[in-house]
Image 1: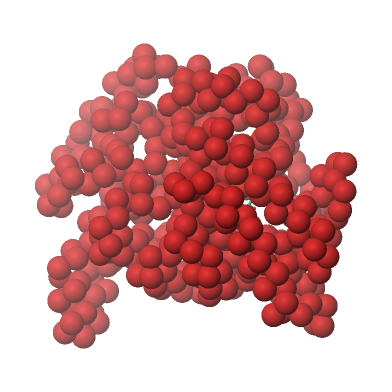
Image 2: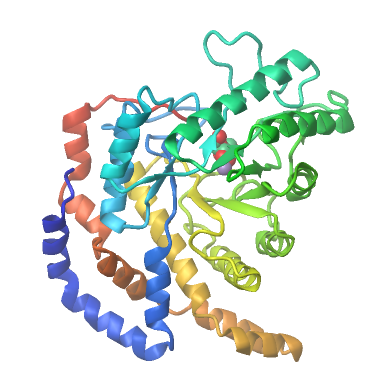
Length: 424
Ligand code: PSV
Ligand code: MN
């Protein structure tokens, strides 16, 4: 492991004076700094195995070098992130890209880096070599029962892998949809999807969740069979108490009020998890907080308020994950930036004057409501996030240390300049 306690210690020593100055300033500004730091220490965000390599667009892919060549190296990369920030303590696997050859060895490796296995993801949006039937026209909604059966069996197989590793959730994202009017009978497609999911749901261990992702469009351009939160919510309700909706920030039509969706799903007890990313146009999979940081804060504002209302533990009540892709940046630097942005938004939401906001809302004091939210959003909470890292044994400046230690060069030396990670 290239990042050890000594490296972190030396690095922190160089930054501690400046950090203390900024931290003392903010603790004097806000009331509950210590409690917020503790919550930040506990908060972890899972890293998807498919975000560790360079992503591409349909026009090209410009590989970065030193990409993980197998599951072991993907775990090593997440271990590296976690050592730097102590907030990336889980990896989410995608089957069949990440099928472990030896469960015991993979679990031991993850434990060595203090990593958990987050939700496992099925893949029925691509055909695999040797696969009997094609998913060209969909999987769980397919008109042919044999294709649906194949897709159901695959999902059950994914659960089996997850059970071996200690995962506690299956995330299903379907590309099923249509690109031309008339291509699909909407009602039949939805009904078939429900029946397929019911079969998968029956195979779910009692302590597992089924997380159902929705997405407005792409790869289908006319309709998507699970296209919005209402459709996912309907399925989750029909399936039962272990089924939940998963919100991926990139899966909405432009200008959708995601924070309102979050509030209502939480109220109904059906919000199960999150995929963080950012976008300007569609499912752009950009670094969290890079385009619309205020939206990210508003989402966390609803999350904190809604989770507190239901008595949910912030750290464990929902599944938190990044779902991004990196065409231009070093994936590991991008992921460090995403985690930081998520932590900042969470910390800001924790500083909101809740009582004041409730009062201002009850009095229809619109100006005051805005003042309260923007007071939190415009507070520089970065010293709180840095303090949480310090307390947890991570680096005060993770990207700075990553660069100074030339960790990408080290990975390229070990793995080669032309490696390609499996994934999206
Ligand atoms: C496709 O849009 C997607 O990004 C979904 O969000 C899934 O979570 C992910 O790919 C992996 O299948
Ligand atoms: Mn996603």
